[in-house]
Length: 363
Image (cartoon, rainbow, N blue to C red; front, top):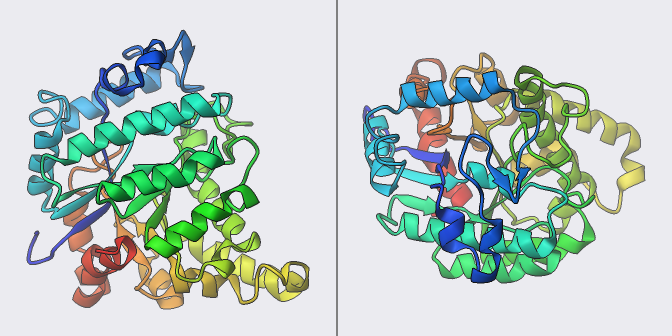
């Protein structure tokens, strides 16, 4: 709690330890365990693309500067995660991967190996959260490389007591999120009341990523990847009829800001007015209505148009994520989120920091 506000961090991260994969991969697959930084390879092949030495050094410097007392000396373990939450004033954190976003985002990886990495990560995260499961909430990884593995892993993480999973926004093996192969997964998430967080797999992942085909700097790739991949993901879920067929499904779009949403919903509504006949079997109301009904999006406190977003879309779909402990995590971001009360009012800020994420994650 901070300044009288209860706070749910809807998009925090873990830094996976170097020995995670060696300890948690199936015994017959330990030869695929990651090598330690700076290279981070699987059998000599890097898990990322287009990261310069300058960007790597910048990341190490930023993380070292931002987390000198808690995270780094303690290897970003469970105890240091909880202590960092207390320092920030966060009451509950929903935890997403760091390296795992890259590891499970290699398009050329075999479905079987991707499944092994997925299970290993989820098992480790379960142990990580067991330190204090009341406030450390795991968000399960799902293997998009193998549609037949999606339901068994969903059921397994639900048995952990988790009520959220994440998917990458990027195409995997040529499949969009609306691919018919994923339909049983969407059906089961809706039936079980499991929230689905959509998270771009990282600017430098080895999945098809908006901007990566034309830019080589992190400046260019990072600017494109998060918002534009989320735009594509939302479009796929609407155009492909996933939201139409599953009206009680809850979907969150994370770590991309919310400003793009104003333009994108306007654009999609305009297209629907003109071309709705073309998608009439899958899209039976305005795209913006689907979003308002069942979608959520994380805000950045520094976005200058939050009041306009609330005016056009409402305050009931906005949630907050700190991005702790990534290199671009702002140490005062929770304080800045609470300070939005001066601009948005106390009731709206309480919705963003607590009531809306409670609804999204089904707490």
